[in-house]
Image (cartoon, rainbow, N blue to C red; front, side):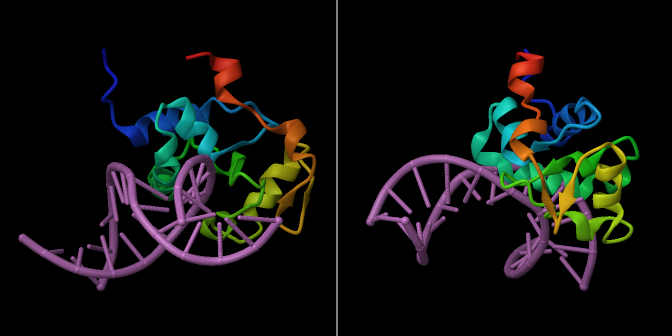
Length: 111
DNA sequence: TCCATGACAGGGT
DNA sequence: AACCCTGCCATGG
């Protein structure tokens, strides 16, 4: 039973599994990890994801589909750019059709 | 070494 | 229906 692995590492694992052209939310990841109340910590993990390179942080947004973390990228437009490059429509920091491209780890990965 | 702050979300009043 | 309030980990000053 290795349920006590580093929470951050687990978050990174899930984020890396997000399919191209899809996005998910901090809360969804937290829930998947069985720590819905730690949705915040997921955000902290993303903030620390600067040390890692294989973390598609641009595919993680808040529950409104808003690019809350775009200012943490190399450039303010980097996040939106990366998303649009995957066919995701972004308007005014808001992901369009968020409900349709939303990727739920619970349904796809099945814990 | 200690305090404060930082990519969120859901429940209660 | 809207606003307030807590939960939680890591890093920097």
